[in-house]
Length: 349
Ligand SMILES: [Zn+2]
Ligand SMILES: [Zn+2]
Image 1 (cartoon, protein in one colour):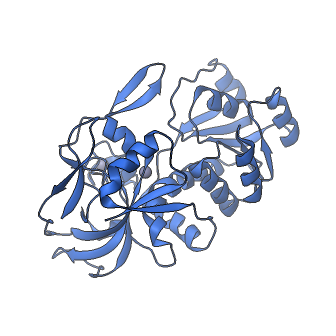
Image 2: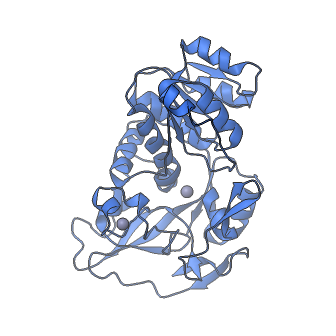
Image 3: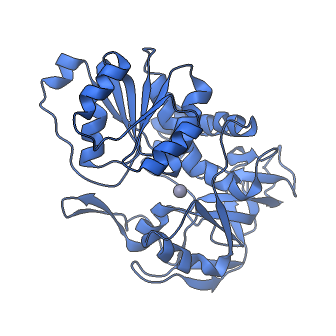
């Protein structure tokens, strides 16, 4: 099989070839038709995430080189192991990549995506920048019937991230308006999932007027510019005391500052964005405002199924996609790093 491999951190990917693995036990070999190139792949290639304030999170440990990136995988079943049931060669599928160890408490309760010994495809075990990928069990294969095959893999990352965050926000309890902070691709999906799973007014905030306009077209009840003077007072007035939840799809000091400032008493801030920075708030404000601040990282296998059902039902507008051949993986990572990609680039191995 052909792969585009990470051979060293901070270096260009290189084409490598290997024997396609023969699936054993419950394993399934998937022939990759599409694999999305995600911004987090840029960080994995670099070997670190920026935390803000000049600090970095080292993401090099736990991976053997050469390594195959790519966690936004769709394809068709090429071969199945002797113990893999309910799966047929030729089936078209999206692959849930956030696979855990299967033995810890987090995995047992269905939160494999939070496992501390992950077998996540394209993150800690070889992923989809390749003609084939090995999946440990058919339960990670999700039907793509009724879903655009070009985007099916990417829904497992950006769609699931947006959906997982919105479930935490809506599931917090109180009814009332919900604020989406940051209208990039994931935030725009978040807006649509919010409308799909709740009756609440969905508000949206972004410093870019074009994105605010786009949010109105996707059904936001009203939009706000977080950089505007007295914006907190404006939102408080418009919402009659604040949003019950704010979901921060940016993840900087200023986006978090805005998000926490506009939630009502008893409200929740869900942090999703990874831009980097440091957030501080006087400790007494947490009890005095009965404020919850929580993080959300992708989503569970169960949430992935629910999310795909919403996509299938037409609740999410498709994002722009550009298809590129596998050997353009490295150029694509460079384009992402330089901010030259609109929507999603998807490789077609
Ligand atoms: Zn991703
Ligand atoms: Zn585990």
